[in-house]
Length: 434
Image (cartoon, rainbow, N blue to C red; front, side, top):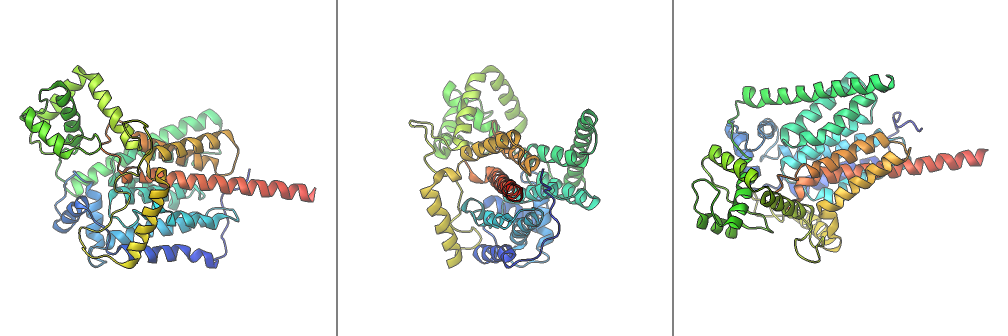
């Protein structure tokens, strides 16, 4: 096996690529592209009144960053730092003559497209990338602290990231206890991983509701109303408490988006939850039919023949910012680059493609003895789990929902290629000197 923990490397001119990427994205996207969700979190950051409809941690971080950066641009610079400096640190941790090719990942159209958008999904992906970086480094207390912080930020910025974190946590402690014997090691890894995971959730709960005193809301009501609206239209009677069938139908027709049903304003969460639970129990086939259709659309499949990956996902590129009506040539150039690739190769912007990438990388990692195979296995599992975590909660084929799967799948595939090439070169060198 090749030692995957690289010694200190000499700095080369091509190591300036992350600096170039950072500067390019900063000029193209400043002060950061913002949507209505983003502006809601910015308002929380400015007023210091937090609620958990969007993760409070992001608004709190933004409020701290606004003290240092002008025009609410702090989160843009945080995201770009995490992306480009993260790629630099990963490159420094890889022992391979091809390692500098890792910088290309940041320039790929399916990565650079959202790097300037202030979304929790983007920051979550970059935090998880730093957690993956910790798997490439020797175990240390400083490394454990960085890993813990990365996982905390990832879960704190997007709640369902807790599923994607599990393979990373188990993989990290597997490496930590790798010198221990077989069965004892497995038990110890699982116990420590479970304890670490629970402590992360407890700390996040205390941070949100004790330190920030965030107001509790019920964001899950959106998914419940989607389900109830669909079943209502099929049963021809309203299952949404306090809302007549004609109003549900009208809202469905006005808000429908590729078979995604939405009625967003419902005042009584307790009544909606009770109706949802009883309806799912009474009509499981209708519920599962709707959820399977939504998930297929989430993956990028059309729901009519030829059932093809016929178009990129929604929001794979934002043409302009809600905050700024103007744009610049560099942003237009990046947009043309991203949209050109999306038109020519739309599958790069669909969930199904990246689910398949995760599956292939996982199989290759398990079936071979290539370097980095533990890291690539963990990344593939995390990428696949991230997509599958939307099985019952997806509401649209929105690109940003699988941004981490794209980043993890791409990084894992590149590590596999690096490992294969390095292993092949070493084998050829042995034959030459034999």
